[in-house]
Image (cartoon, rainbow, N blue to C red; front, side, top):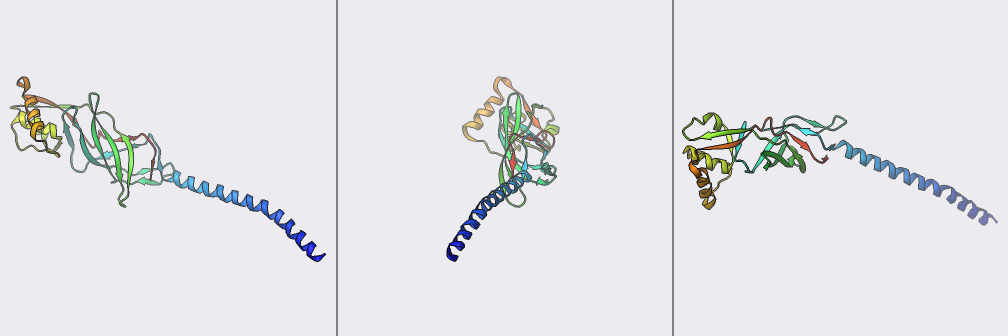
Length: 214
């Protein structure tokens, strides 16, 4: 009789405790999910955020219309999330490419390098830059070229037009490509060339096209 009563009591206790255990498990799962979502929210910079960029090395980039160039810029100010936490610190490096777009060129950001050594993919794009400057044979082009980073194709054409063989570019173009560009520079008696002129400290701020997660 005592054994039967003890068994009945244990069964009753298990029936009472079991639903409570399920509720507790569900509560823990919900709490963990909320914590995870909060962590993601704290580490996200939403799409549409504008990230100001600057160059510490140059004040001007000159490209031939249609030319591309790989560049690295720096974040000009701390970028914070909606709660005020710094997610992308000032000085973070952003690398990508200047690519032709319509009548000009724009910067397409691809990678971001934090100071702690971590790197992330990033999807951001600048406005289209259409500003032009002209180099001419026989003219004083010093003001245009002074301190500029010049694309490979642009450098080749400038050297052909101005006769300044000291002009160099970040990339070296040679062989058949070099000959073709020099021929283009002097085609039809051409003695001038219009270049796209980019100020990396004002023209290349990017707008995120997707959320950035740290």
